[in-house]
Length: 594
Image (cartoon, rainbow, N blue to C red; front, top):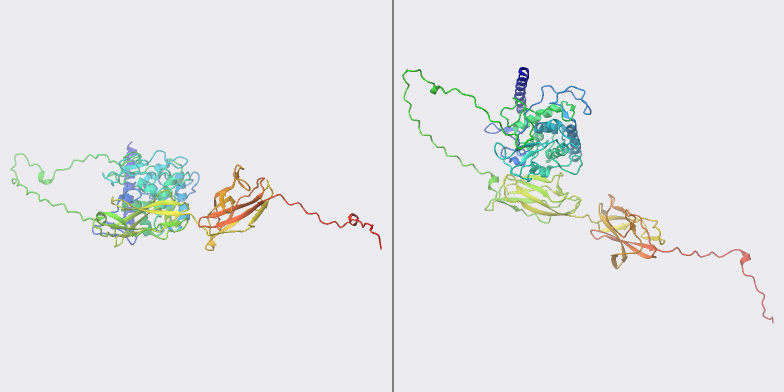
């Protein structure tokens, strides 16, 4: 027992020493745009979260995190599949499934946002300080944590105040929000940042694949290049707005970059120290799994010596000067805090945005503009406005995100990034809200219309023939154009109509076949390819002879009619014979001669 206690003391001492050295080194090597304010606090440029940035605007709500620092010696790089062959502590190793999730997320971000240059080691560093790599890799085969990882409730009691936003769906708390999952997203952030990283059709903050991919997109949501130190710092601070958090994540990032190794799932060690624990490093603490595991244990104050002025005198000795009445305390009035620009916002106004309509796949020609105003209608500058895409739509802002935060200018106006229409048509909403203040949001209605073509031309014969009960030898192929240019992904409707004056669907004559071989005389959902071409399925004929019309139409007014003839083949006309034996013979004349 004594030996065990001694080892713990040595570990605590080493951890404290390493923390001091690492923090000092990192603080001395900050990016060029990191300065100190008048109180000695470090500040950054306008693009970096500041001390007054609302916690709800970060990924974690600025929840507590693990403060353990990496071992002094980084392990040598080792194979990342199978059982590790190089030695390394479980503290420094990364569980196999968790490591796979980080690398898959990096690969996806390299494809989706190559300019961000997201390294998987950054996800590993954040995963380490947020949850100890999903509590040492305690995940199932699909990457979902065995038991939910839930941070303290953000009720303003030692933490940020974030009232419930998900009705307890993710965190089980219908009063306040809690950070959830291996990457510790708060529900309000997960609502727009969540991703499906393992392809199961769900976005689950408790799944390490989903959470890692969401964290990657979150860190890359602006035009930050994470290979640049200043942008890397900004991204990390946006995840949890703390300089100590930044230093801790950078320490693990550097450690993992020097090399790490894979360990089996569930064998990783749990971190010891937490940012909200005054006794961090003294003894192991459990992972964040309870409703409020971050609550601090009551501490027993150590007895203190009485101040020198209260030392007892020797018995019988004359007393010192009689005490004098203390002067009455002077009441210092509490200064009234100066309101920030955000505090003065009373409402939001539309700054002239109308007609938000775009064709599928196109960028909306107009951008959304919102004006922040006081109650008197005056403009409020330097206020952050959050724009969020809502509804059943695949439309996004430029860069693929469904949320964007923009600061109002001197005229009180914030202009959202350009909207890009997806392939899904229909109406959706973009909502503008004030970050850090509860005022009614301002909704903008937007509509995505289907792709159009103004001309359809046949690339084959415009008249096809077939015998009754047979099949047409040729297939119909058409090309769609819009103002002479190729029109791709245009929906084409093909209908076998009764006549050129009656566009109703015919009930006899040629037909297509469905998957079950049944007759179908209207086809929908067919689209032109990248070259604007569309080939229809094979046509068949029933036993009814006649001339029929196949009409093709598109949005935009393009129409093309193809003539279909169903008839028995004509009887062949015999060729005249050339055999003299079959020629008629000359008959003698019976007329009398003169």
